[in-house]
Length: 326
Image (cartoon, rainbow, N blue to C red; front, side, top):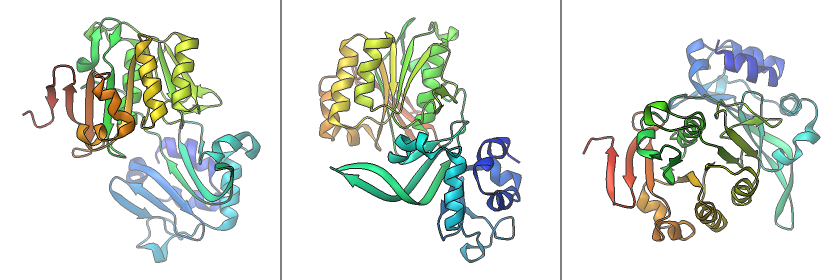
């Protein structure tokens, strides 16, 4: 069985469900990237591009009618196990719709949102969990790092553009790791890296300690709004490089400009299919009109998650790399 799932995820599930998942073939568990639990409905695993139903008798079900049904009681027990019987200590995370497990696995949570003054105060009557299995890919940034190193102690301001589930966070994490530890073959010394990890997906901190490998010189501001976090890091930790995920709001753009104007490099990601797609958004357009970013990396999943489609130099308007080689 996949040791990550066996050691870090299964202990957070009710015994009967745990036993059912343990009967799945090793090749299924080894490739699973999401486990979905919905009250009153069959348990499923996302394995590559396929959906696998867990059988109520163990093993793979022939379809949803033969699936293991996740019960109301199991939903309550699951939340208690994930929170270590101290749900109160996870209140802030749950309000944002997730919990981070030991090992860096992020669990999305849905239910009835209690809203006050336009803000979600708590999520009650939990109805579903999406367990995203954390798979680090050390070396994921090897192909792009030569295009991102500006000098021995600096990276180009870089934006990574990617549709959902195409590996942008995996790439971002490994860029942070390599920048932090240094890359001798590229003449890059180790940099002071500051990560703003608003949804605990990059470093995946568990009680403040990164569960993912993010580098020896990296400081992480966990569960903090990106815009505020970027400014806080620049003022308090004197980073050489700030790393953050999924910018897209007006306040994010303002903070990015402040980071750059402070002489600090930045590597960030944004949802999108292409550079044209991203530049059409009013909140981000100003960053391109002002030529703030220097490099744009575009990803897809055409050859699997993390496929690098292109690396573009915004200053010279030059295509530095394309997957097709054209």
